[in-house]
Image 1 (cartoon, rainbow, N blue to C red):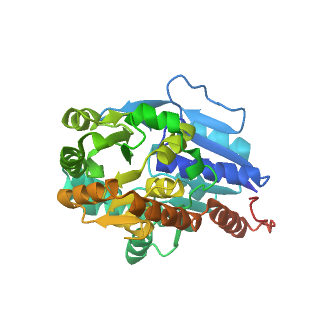
Image 2 (image 1 turned 180 degrees about the vertical axis):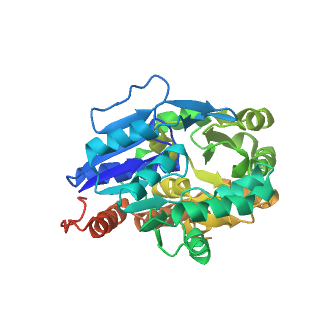
Image 3 (image 1 turned 90 degrees about the vertical axis):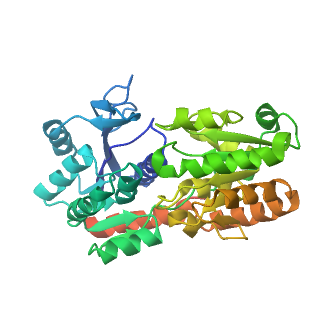
Length: 384
């Protein structure tokens, strides 16, 4: 089987989409199949960064959010690259400029097309002050995904919405978590002391992009209130950055802001914290929540979207009405002052994450690709 994977975001960019896309490439290559990747070129990066079949396309920073890259029009170059690779299947992971090129190539060449719906762009329109765009964005997305033989989406609520809008080939895929990489044993006492000072200080963590769609006003309000109550008994840590970084940090001067971390450092950070707070209302899956839970962290999350599907209230974490800053504050303070309850939730969080092990999803992905390409390949369970 020869898979071409087209994406508008990829390593070294850190986000949930790149995590899933890299997992697809690694899964298919690990099963012995040829995989070509078309992705943006990031600053300081050559066309091919690892000697594999990979095309990096020139890109420019998106002005409101420079870490996001917009690839230049490259129909000819991408087409020549794919012609040389001769794919059996095209998987377009994003709806950006490169995704459009990959989709067009698949349709023109009569190849099976798989698309992914990772990001709830219609909701983003509301958070960026253009709610009138929401129906237009939906019409575009319906047109974009309709030709796909399969549409991957990681959340049940989004899956229901896609099917309601006539996209009946939507399937739930992409919400697995690497439970071997994210584990409680990565807890690092030295790092905790560097972050928090005292061993008994509770580390309250937020991981994610700092952007308007992440409900950050509620985070700021809740953390300000919780800090006023807890004082030196808690340290508040943010891993991530984005267009709202300066605004958030200027309002939370007591916070340790670490920026984006690589997967190794992130796994150590999760395991070294005590609880994770995620107020976003736009998550299709909430992979961050699953990574935190796999690391043995109770999660305090907004009762919305994919977070609602991942966090089991009062078992593996707590769900709070999305705009209830006082509710988030009360949950943070309550868990910070109750280590026994934190430990109980942490154990259940790990068990919940184990039920979302990536290996099951990886096997299913290979079965899907085999059915679409008609290759009749044998799919063996991924190694433990």
